[in-house]
Length: 183
Image (tube, rainbow, N blue to C red; front, side, top):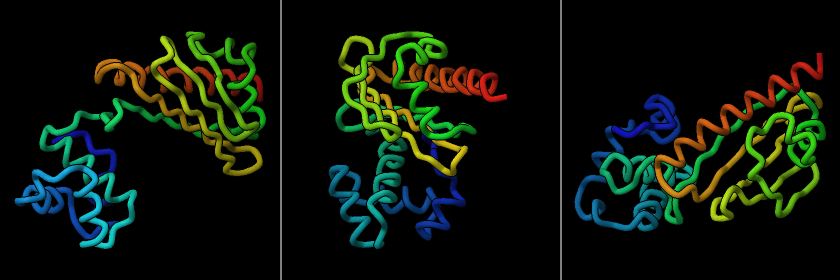
């Protein structure tokens, strides 16, 4: 069984079926041999599921049957890490957008900002320029902001897992830095 990001109770409450039930449905012929897009379209039509739930179910099924590895997408691997910080969005954005601020918490300086929208998002190249970062900022209240880091196209499953751990650690470092500066 793959590492499922959504638990069995949650998938049943939102879709009406458990993972086991979905996998039984999707294992039936001819769906077992359909493309990812065709299976997702079928689920949307037949079970009236949102696009998001169709993708979650098909991704889990493809991992379950060995058609896809964890973190694998059609264009390569991708990881996503998020954390909520007890600061205003402008403070968190500055920690990412300013090279000086970033150097205080980001252990490796392989990030090259390519585009940004103040207090909303940063797009960047990472390392050799093949993998990309998408950093999005979501204010939850005046003094609370979530950041979501998506790292697209690491070269392998092992690299994706390494980057998942790396970004979790970096966000923890940033949290400690912000905690010290805002107490």
